[in-house]
Image 1 (tube, rainbow, N blue to C red):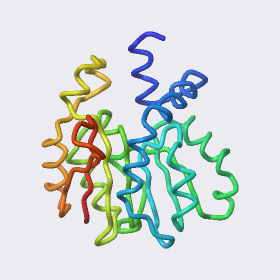
Image 2 (image 1 turned 90 degrees about the vertical axis):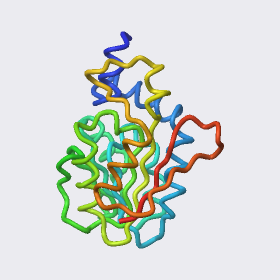
Image 3 (image 1 turned 180 degrees about the vertical axis):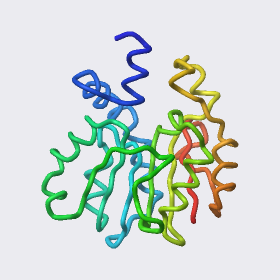
Image 4 (image 1 turned 90 degrees about the horizontal axis):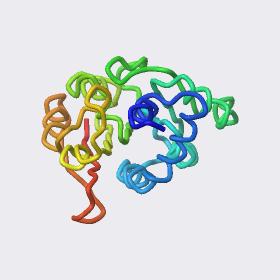
Amino acid sequence: MPPRFIARQLSCPSGLPGRIVGRLMNRRNARMNAFAIKHLELQPADRVLEIGFGGGVTLPTLIAVAGSVTGVDRSRDAVNLANARFSTAVKAGRAQFRVGVVESLPFDSGYFTKVCTVNTVYFWKSLDLAFAEIFRVLAPRGRAAIGFLPKQWMDRMRMPSDIFTSRTSEEVRSALAGAGFRGVRTERPEAATPWNVMVAVR
């Protein structure tokens, strides 16, 4: 598949190519996703929001541990697949999946206790608007975990700049602080790990 086509599928997966790319990304990003979930410190009473769940690699863990799980994704195909795959949890009222974008989350203020998102910041129109919305939907003392590959590594992949916006660690940290988050810190399993998981508290 041409690089631009792959980039568009990463941004908003659709059809059979979207499923294929989603499965590949599930495998490639499994460690970052698991590390982000670990730092959410999930509890059975948690109401968790995952933004941009894509291929759904984290959803089984979230559904198994948290009280309720909500996923929002800009891809209608990803939402339809999640609703079908996790239909038992959906019917039980423990999971829901909706089409939406991070800059305008379709949820009540202060509803969620945990929010996670991995490899989505490149597609956000505005870090400031996105983190303001995440801050809004989190309950006081709620925790957010944001996983991403910083600009110095992302730029080496030469993704189309009209689809991907590389973000430096400082840009993400500054936007989190500007939205009102406290205790912003960067976590990596090893010092040489290229990707970051930033953890912050509302």
